[in-house]
Image (tube, rainbow, N blue to C red):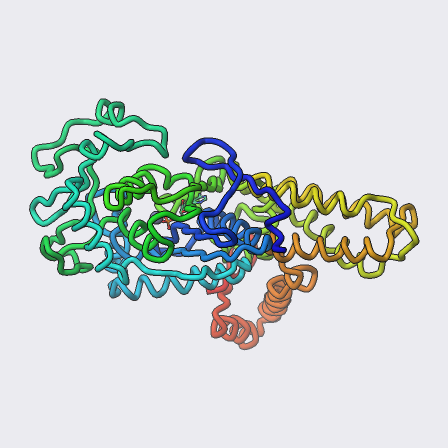
Amino acid sequence: MPLYQDQTLKIYNSLSGKKEIFKPINEGHIGMYVCGPTVYSNVHLGNCRTFMSFDMIFRYLKHLEYKVRYVRNITDAGHLENDADEGEDKIAKKARLEQLEPMEVVQRYTVDFHQISEKFNMLPPSIEPTATGHIIEQIEIIKDIISKGFAYAINGSVYFDVVKFNENHNYGKLSGRKLEDMIANTRALSAQDEKKNPQDFALWKKAEPQHIMRWPSPWGDGFPGWHLECTAMSTKYLGENFDIHGGGMDLKFPHHECEIAQAEASTGCTPVNYWLHANMLTLNGRKMSKSTDNNLFPYEIFTGDNSILSKAYTPAVVRFFMMQAHYTSILDLSDDALLASEKGYFKLMEAMEAVNNLPVAANSGFDVLGWKQSCYDAMNDDFNSPILIAQLFDAVKHINLIKEGKEQISETDKTILKQTLEAFVFDVLGLEAKNTVNDNSDKLTGVVNLLIELRNEARLNKDFATSDKIRDQLLAMDIQLKDGKDGTSFSLQ
Ligand code: AMP
Ligand code: ZN
């Protein structure tokens, strides 16, 4: 019997605003779509948090022995500056600034995203479709929406008619907004605006001559709207009605609201049963964001090369830090919080090592099966990873008592304890044992710092041949030394 039959999973559904008992459309199978990154720059730790939250959710669903098809797209076209309907495509802009082909930009940052995902031990999705690979599907949906009277073509662009849609649907049901309020709160259309109403959004945009990312369509050369790609890719791979759709909280409106409208306009049925929104990672109390400087990048945290950090942290410690907060809560990143997470993480890993050597007795001094179920209860309660971690530390307390001879555990319970710890720590939370005490990035930091010391000694002795050799050879390995007034630091290229 699959594990999910023994557990009652409840999920907070942003659509209803309630925790609901999760019931998939097809028993034993789950279709899950998560909005992927827009690949015009390196992912920052905020982006990583959202993808890690859904990785943990994916892992728990798999752990419950559901067959999960997890689709996470790559946005490689159509996402305009300021998430708006006007302005430059984010990828085309980067390509212009760096004198690259747009697809070179896409390739570079897709590779970066994959490398970072692997470092954070995120499982690859089952399907990772790109927007540019689904232009035909997007054009078909637009034709369908036009034929049903919910969109209009004008001057080579196509817009979704929000007012028309709202006559017998509810535009705003996900974000809790009312169309009347939106209309009342927006300025009137400017004379050059071609939309019927400011709330209408683009399904297809005419490409101006300078716009390089363009495709032919029944309305002329252009490119698809950002919201449409997710409708096209989610329904193509998961069907018109699927189980779970996720993304960051900031995508709820307009992106996800528009996805619902597009799908309902074209198919007549509501696309998603459970909407999940992951909350933001903040730095200095403000949202981390690509468009401002309020950012911290994964490589900065792995090398410690940022003034807010007192040291480098391993990917597993950073992941543990993220998992200590519930995915729907805001989490603020700071050096103190990371230091505390590192301590906790090592304590947990030490206890997991210690389980192997625990002495066994005839009976157990604590209720191991009850403890195991409370781990499940935590995750069944809307994937409550902080409560799960509190349960794991309860086990750590017992392990230490048994180690000191102050409590007992039976052979059978010891096996259950070990298997449960491994299942939740490694499989569900995705914390890798190899990233602990013997972590390679810590070793690398140690080795490079040693070389920096040797270089300083060489410089003091005026042995510049040696000091230059150290600097140049490290650079050849993409490790750059930077001399500053507080000494020498290094960064990985
Ligand atoms: P983007 O590449 O901008 O399309 O964003 C990719 C994902 O990262 C989206 O799901 C965003 O909601 C999410 N995201 C962006 N900023 C943050 C942040 N500061 N904290 C958590 N998630 C974020
Ligand atoms: Zn999306």
